[in-house]
Amino acid sequence: MLYFGTDGIRAANKSAFFSSKILYVLGQALALWNQEKKNRTKNILCIYDTRASASHILHALTQGLMDAEHTLFDGGILPTPAAHWIMQKSPFDFAIIITASHNPSTDNGIKLLLPKSKITEADEQIIENHFSNLLLRTTKSRSRKKQTCVPFQQDAKKIFLEEFFSALPTPDLTGKKICIDCANGAITTVIHELLEPTNATIHLWNNKPNGRNINQNCGATHPHAISTYVKECNADLGFSFDGDGDRIISANAQGIIKTGDDLLAAILQHPVFSMNKTVVGTIMSNQGFARYLESQKKELIRAPIGDRNIIKSMVQNDSRLGGEPGGHIIILQPGIASSDGPAVMLWTLDSLTHHTDQLLAFFTPDIQITRSIKTLHKPDFSDYTPYKLALEKLHTIIPQGRSCIRYSGTEPLLRITVENSEAKSAEQALDILTNTFNELFA
Figure 1 (cartoon, rainbow, N blue to C red):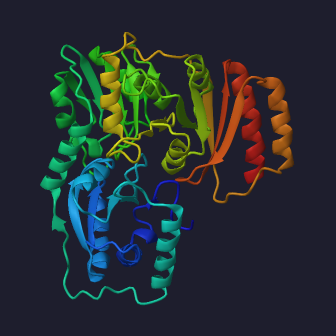
Figure 2: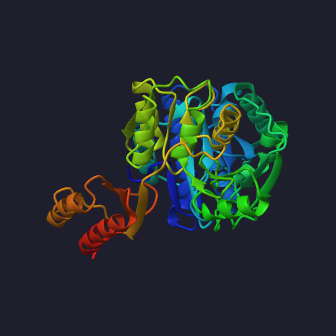
Figure 3: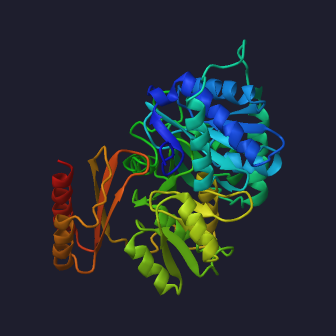
């Protein structure tokens, strides 16, 4: 895809793509795509995270959509998974989420969600075709006056919380201390309401967004922060969200970071999910987690990275749980059609009320280390001779380990990962692969 990456469209928010002119055309393209799907309401939900650029993007998209006789409802700042819960109750054709997820505040992006699923690659191609064709024509708005979206903030938040609590457990955590790293992101608007019914003592961190501090040395991609907070507060558990709230990682009472693999293992202890025979992970799921599932007479099925790929595999393998170590976790039940950080948090907390292990220490993970190399192009390296020779060396250095090399779907990076039970040989193997690809991109 030219514009769509792993999860929507992302770019620097001052780039040409996020000019008013381009966003107007995108709004028109979305309207044409929606009309072809024969949706009738022409009502579109829009929510966003705390980035300062959200209002500009919202306004420009509004002009394009409304000139095409669609109406955009402004749901305000809410975590991305709220869109699915809201669309369970309110008749929207689709939802636009303005966010760049875990990226810094200087970036922004656009995610698109249907009422019960993410959009498909075929949908993305249709939107891109319309967008490209419209760019060849006039890109000026037909409107003589500025058009505004319909205010929907209070209703959106209310509907989200009602639908969310109708489907999820509310654990009794009286006497427990829980730390939350809000990443100065979208979760800040609802975290009190999500945890108040549990009766836990809640300590919030990074919950004062100013439009420029989202994900700034905090949140799910900076796990050292929640580890520190848990130890400082002497808390029982901590959770860290990313900027738009669809990703979550944890730290136990000892401050040990617990990934998406650990959270999946915890949710599997819950009576609702304990009979599941399969869990869908990705190529990045830890081998220690795979061995643990095997010991429980369950199977880890690896899918390519990305919610859409995980969900596809979950449906094919009749699995209700899936996710990746980075914290995107999918629980297939009504209302949850993609990764949902708040839902994972409540299922994990309720699961621990059914299990004696409060430290999330269900398995010992292999050491997994990753390096990234900047690259502006993405050549196919499968037949690259130095890479083949490097793999042969790895077979002798980490015979029981594994490696994974992939291009990022959201950033111009090649990510190199090595996994092994012993650290020194893992570092040695990673050095070999890093040097190999530094030569390729030199």
